[in-house]
Length: 241
Image 1 (cartoon, helix red, strand yellow):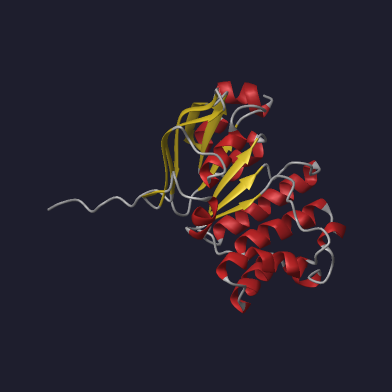
Image 2 (cartoon, rainbow, N blue to C red):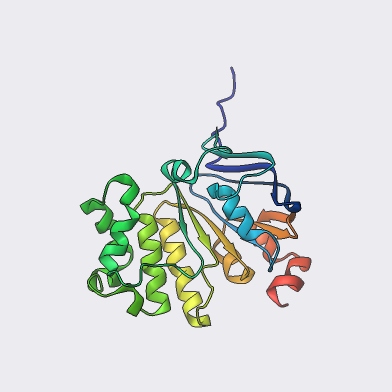
């Protein structure tokens, strides 16, 4: 009797080489995320984290290797196609439409699907009750933590299979970073797979299932989050211990 086929990863980078001109940024990078997982991608400045996100989204194309979503090779597909296949991103520094209300920002998240439904709003407001109270307020007048809620809510309006988060702790006070990651964990527990791209290794690994560590475009460590937290090399480089 044959064994059942293994489900393809939700997202897979397979031996990806990405260049900017003649500069080799990502070097034979392979990683994967399965449905329901929360995975963090760690690294310092110039490690290749942002280029990895751009490669996933199709903003830059790899010279070698493949990008797959649900087993489909999307390496040559446009960003809009990949979004339609279930990707959504919460960008660095949120990038909200500041002159628009919270409600209008959320509506923009469902634009590619032809507009939001009552169920979409109900789900976001259930996760972030504050956004219902502030729905008529201009997004640019919110605090940093509140803006992060809007950015996450806007991304969830597209009903993503995989939510990409670029430096979610960027620009937030330490107490807000802790609260923000509690919210990220809550969103993940609602059933959304997540890839968190971060420099803050300690807080990321505290909620992640698995982690990858990049250094100058190469994968140098990977494994269960609990194991990475105890890795002496990682502790010295990123955890300050």
